[in-house]
Length: 403
Ligand code: BGC
Image (cartoon, rainbow, N blue to C red; front, top):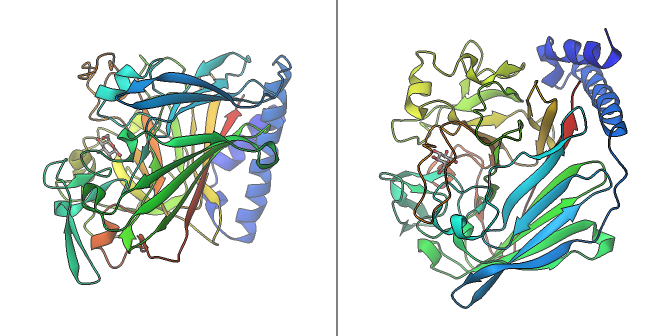
C-alpha cells in the first residue's frame, strides 16, 4: 500500500487521533506527514503559477454604493474571489488529484443573484450568526428585541444582516500577506443590537493553499457578536451533484441538541453511539436518514458541534473530502463550535433575484462560530463583547488533495 494511503488508513481507523494524549500527538504527527506526502504529489502535477497581488475590479452597484470583487491567487493556482457585498467568498478554486481546478464553493458569477438569494451563500454572517431564541435577549438587565426572520427566532443577524451590506475593502499590504481587509460599521441599534460595532474580515491566501479568514470587532456598548463564514462546499466542483458522498470528520465529542425550532436545549450531548459521531470519517449520507429525533428536527444535519479544545488557539474543527476527485478541505479554527449543515432547506427554486438554482443538499456548510443562542444560554461560552475588548477569531480553510 502506498505510504500516504497507509498513513491515512491508520488515522481514519483510530479515534484517539483527535485526543490530546501522547497517542493523539503521534497520530497528529502522522496526519501532518500524510497531508505533506499527499500535498506534494498533488502539486507536482500542477503547472507553475505566479503569486500575484490581489486583483480588484468593479462588480456592480446597489443604489449609490459600488460593489467590488477581489481575486487572490497563489503559486499553485488556488484562487479565492471575495466580493465586498456581504464580505462574501464567491468562489474557491481547488485542484483534484489530477491537478484539475474547479470551484468548490457554491456561488454566482455576477452580483445580481446574490441580491435575491436567501441562503447566505459564502457570506459573512453577523452581527450574530445562527439563531437567537424568540428573537430577543437580555444583557445587563435590559431586553433587546430583534427581527424574527426564522419562525419565532432571529437567524444570521436579522432581516438585513452583515451578509446584505456593502463592506469597505482594501488590499492588504504585501507585508501582511496576499489578501483583502473588509470593514463594516454597524450602527448602534442596527437590527436591534446595541452599540456601534466596527467589524473586520480579512481573507488571506498563502502559498501552502490555506485560505485564512480572520474576524475582528470592537464596540461602543456591550453587544453579542458572532461572525461566521457561510460557504457551502461541494468538492466535486459540480454544483448539480449532492454532497451525500462526501466524507466528513468533526473533532468533537459532543454536540448541542436542539428543540423543534432548532434552538439548543442547553445540553451538551455525547456524540458516541449516535449519527452525530463524526470523530472518525463517515460518509455524509450514511446515517442522515436514520430515525433519530435530532436528525428529524434538523431535516438532516443542522447542528452545532462542541469542538474538542485541548488548548486555546487554532485547532482542527473538521475535514471534508470528496473521495472521487481527491479534493479535501481541512477546517481549523479558534472558535468553540462548528455548525454542520447539509443544505436540507435548499430546494433548487430560483430566488427572487434569479439564478439561485442550487438543489437539495448540493452544498454543505461548516460554519465555525460560537454556539447558537449563546446570549440566552449562560452555560455556553460567552459571545458578549464589551467596550475596550477586541473580538478576534480566525478560521483556516486548508485546500488539500488526497490520493
Ligand atoms: C442554518 C440553517 C439555515 C441555513 C441557511 C444555516 O446556518 O443552520 O438552518 O437554513 O443557515 O439559512
